[in-house]
Amino acid sequence: MFLDNRQVAMDSALEALADSIDYFQDNLERLRPSLRDALKPHYEARAKSMHELQELARKHLALLPRDADVERDDYMWLWSRLKSFVGNDSQVLIGELLEQERVLMQALSTLFTHPLPEPIEPVIEECLKGCRALIRELYASQQRQRR
Image 1: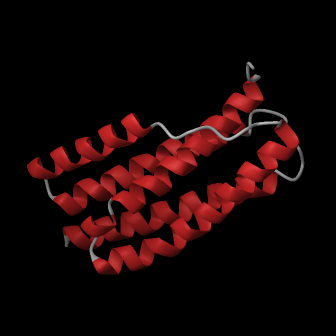
Image 2: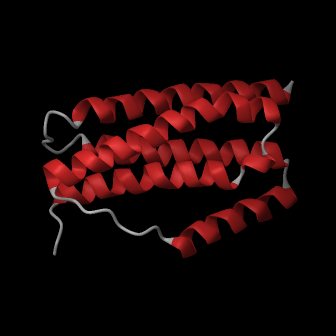
């Protein structure tokens, strides 16, 4: 079955949400405890929003869930670890988390360029607000480390 552009945009947004959650969980041990504690509620809220969006996409867009790209996830994990050998591990990780947010915001913004069923829009708006809050938290942490 071929997906229409709206379904592709939703699939991309769901994939970006899942990737950001997976990346955070895969790198928990690399985060300072204070940063981990500050970020955890953001990612818990994101997981809740992602599951809600998956259900809405299934119901309103006839979009079935897809399997994760395990090879891509492994590559991203390895690449992040390799970069950490060259630079400050914490700074590299924060940079990677910020990049995840940029990718997610782009996917969510692209999704908004399509007509969406009314119940889906508030969830996407909540995801965008969550991205902005997480970016603020990551930048603040980055600035604290530089001092």
